[in-house]
Image 1 (cartoon, rainbow, N blue to C red):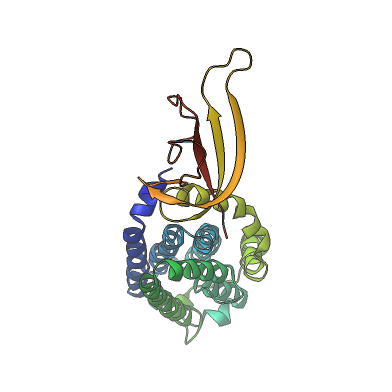
Image 2: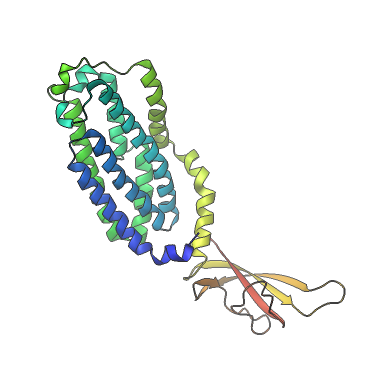
Length: 301
């Protein structure tokens, strides 16, 4: 919607994205409440999304869009798992848990899968998204992306710490409750999300294929406005003098050229067709003489 503004403020948005990644990780690291830890981790994950989007390149945008989908799968699964254990114990304090592996082995195995997904471990969905985001981010701003890597390390710290306290070690205060493992109904709710975690992690091509066309179109809109970009020009030589029978006559010629910067709009230099043609907007209703009007279309290399 606002391609010029997106390019103009991209550096600021990249910096804010890195800040959100690190700040969200620090907030999650300080939490003792299981649900709040998952909630604050979402701030960090959304920072990766905006980092990819405002990198304004193919890998960044694809990673940002894919990471939005991954966030819904992984964080949705973690919230579901938190709700399952809260329903049994009526406490969300991480300190009240411990040794849950012995009481609910299936639950803790599923929790491990979603924890590793939230960490973006290779083989899980978030790894693909974050890898694309960081690839695009380093191309746009290496310093900002290096700060984002620090946020990813914080994610590993609070997620592994949470899993160690909840699933491993001696039993905590929860032991006074008769905790049962997940039942068939709960397993049916969580398994589709677990399948998506592994599917996107091992074979992301179908998901990336869905968004490829939209990303290419978006990049054409953004990078077709301003800056030096490779482009292909369709040069229209327009005769605007009124004709008696058939109206205006138009003859089209194709040529390769290099886009120049002119008030944020990518236009082609004068190709020598008539006079006054350089920089004229296509289809100018005020044109009253023979000239060359150039329309540049961004070509992705």
